[in-house]
Image 1 (cartoon, chains in turn red, blue):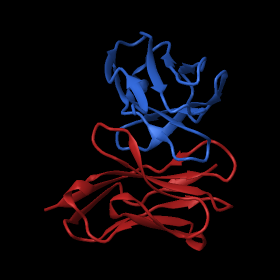
Image 2 (cartoon, rainbow over the protein chains, first blue to last red):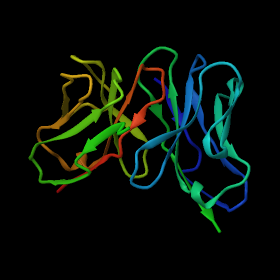
Image 3 (cartoon, rainbow over the protein chains, first blue to last red):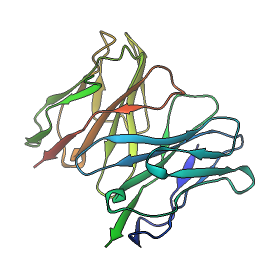
Image 4 (tube, rainbow over the protein chains, first blue to last red):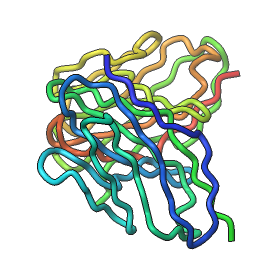
Length: 113
Length: 112
């Protein structure tokens, strides 16, 4: 069974600082990878996805993630945090075959002024 | 575009009561999903459907039932509500299993 680990359930950064949210997965084959963002009292919205091809993926709101097969990682970064980035972030993995998306436990990002 | 619409947004149930959480999508998506999200946790899949008339269990199906009579609607039924089912429930859909999922805003359910 797939598993997704997000290191750090809460991350706090200062406005303008680098954002780094970690995601590691277990898979014997390169899966499809997603990052979703959840604002308070809302559903999840897609930030970015990796399917095949270029390992550095750019998403919305200045976020990007890099797929590293050797490290089974898909960390999310943003060079400069903005107050509006405060939200919950979820990494998710879809196996090459199968319909069940597996989510990590989520990381709540807090941005200090 | 409405996308994925869930009703109600909030509900309080007594133990043993039953209710149906409604989910409808207007994107003509074949695939639909129900998840639950417990406080501070990620989402766990309850049931999913790959088309009208077809449903299948996810990771945590016990205590729930679903049906899919139309492409648009995918209701989730709780027959005998238990405190362990207190959670936020999300419905999602996509055009096929490999595409990003579109989520509704959730139903916050408390069982007392």
